[in-house]
Every structure is written in structure tokens, then in C-alpha cells.
Image 1 (tube, rainbow, N blue to C red):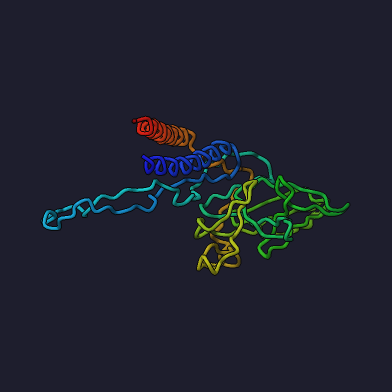
Image 2 (image 1 turned 90 degrees about the vertical axis):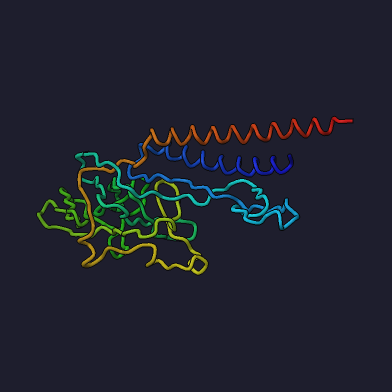
Length: 280
């Protein structure tokens, strides 16, 4: 009975984490460019009990000897699902949608440790004045959008027209007719399981590359030079999240049922222990 309670409580804690993942997906269903997360389970270590002491009794047995008793289940991983979301027109010249799976914009974020390149799928850009004559291209949270060389994009204040082509080249036309040209920084993520969620729809890279036995080039590829032909961007549109509310609700109900069953196991085991302790 004690083992029953241990197994159930171990699984309860992991089911709670899965419900947190599902709730996070549902809360971000209207977040532009949000990518849903999916939790997968694996069993915890089990013990092998030899309940047959006579070896001759196991002759011609097809199943493994003994009884295996598990200790519950745990989350094996929380996977980032990079499937494409729906493209919705916005008719706003600074709204962009990445149209190819696995591509992210590069963003310069100021952290306690200093400036850091992070990544986002949200293509809603804005202009923020930094002086009388200059504007910065930023996210809704004020983080600088960078070019392919990781430099912040600064635009003359007298800009009147913006054009962004499918390969991420932004041409800004001034009132005097002169253009400014920038290449938006875009990367292709090859191994999204190594990305770290930083909050506000931003992703970062791990710092323990030696322990993970991977390098930055294994996780993502900078789309620069000839590789820029692989970029897919649509101006005047935004990408919706790839969250399917029907699927999330189904997963939530199934997880809640599993949670209820495990809770019931704890309750029944507790009642049985009470009966045993009450025997005189």
C-alpha cells in the first residue's frame, strides 16, 4: 500500500506539470507566432521481484521472470512544436509573417548579464524614437530587431514608406526619395528541443553546450548570404499561434481524468492502511 501511494504521488506531480503545459498553450492561443508545447511521458525506474524460487517451474516461460513493480511516470520532455500557424492579413506595413517552419527573427534583449541575442516568431514590429533624427525597429516590448550581422536597425526619422520582400530585405524610402536597405536577421532552427523559453514569446540558447554535446551551429543556422533565399516572409500579415483549442481541451480532460484516478489511488491506499492499523 505504501508503494501504491508512492507511485501515485510521483505520477500526480508529473500530471500537474502536463496540465501547466496545456494551460500555457491555451492562454497563448491568440499570441502571434506562438508555438505550442507538448509533454511526453516515460516510466520511472522499476524493481524486479523474483516470486518463483524454483527455477524448474519457469521452464518454457514466454514472459520475463518475476514481477516488475514500477514507481510511477515522469515527463520525458516538453517538446516545442514548430508547425506553421495560419497567416492572417493585417494590412500594416510593419507586420510580417514567417511562412516557413522553423525560422525565427533575431532580437537584441538587454538582460542583467548584458545584451543577448534571442529569437522570436512574432513579426509585429514597431518604430521607437531614439533621437530627433533616428528611429529604432523594435518588438512590442521594445527589444531591438537586428539585421543579419546582429546590429540594431536604426532608421531615419523622415521615413515614409517601408517594403519588406520575401527574403527579409527591408527597403525604407525617405521623403527625399533616398532608400535605406536592411536585411532582417533570420535563423533556421534545426533542433528546437534545445531552445530555452525566455518568456514574452522569446527563445534563447543554452549555455552548457559541453554537457549537451552540441554547438550553436547544430541548433540553428544563420540565414545569411546565399542562404537568404531560403527565408520566407510575407509583409502586411501576422502568423497566428499553432494551438488547436479542440486538441488542448481533449488533452486537458484526459490529463484531469488521469489525475483523478491517481488521487483516488492515494485515497484508497490511505483507507486500507487505516483498516490495517485498526486491526486488533
